Image 1 (cartoon, rainbow, N blue to C red):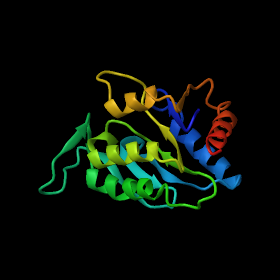
Image 2: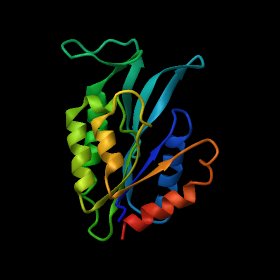
Image 3: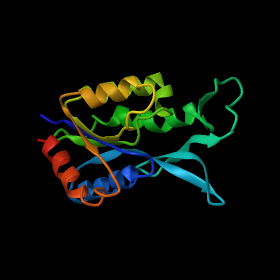
Image 4: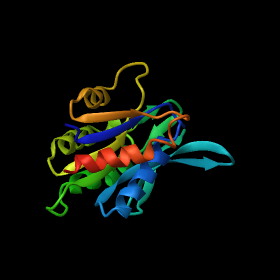
Length: 190
């Protein structure tokens, strides 16, 4: 039985946009939804990083091109991006910890966009995602990267779980997937 739904696909294919549309559709149906997504930050037409944005409207840096970590903190880097682990954890962890604290009737949906290399520098985040996946009161609607290079342990765990449905998003199917994703998430709530 499916308990969680994840989207995967190439970078820039529209996973985050699809997650945002699904979140809006679920909310309009009265489903309790919370969570976070990542958003590109651009300057002068060039991507300079990513922000974490919670569905309650809080925002903070996830990564920036060539920035330096705060004094005394370890540097986490993915390609040209330096990850601000502290900022990420300040925004993402409360969302995951509160995911199961909602109303007792029906399950809550927790948006987790994304579970990728940058986010996986946080051991606390990894633990919180595993705990949320095991929580009977929460459905995760999230995104994971397509397999490339060295496997990411948590991503492969998620991909191989019996209670997870993974949708592969492409430019050709992204517009037609919304209704199916919303229907599957709704069926997870029962």
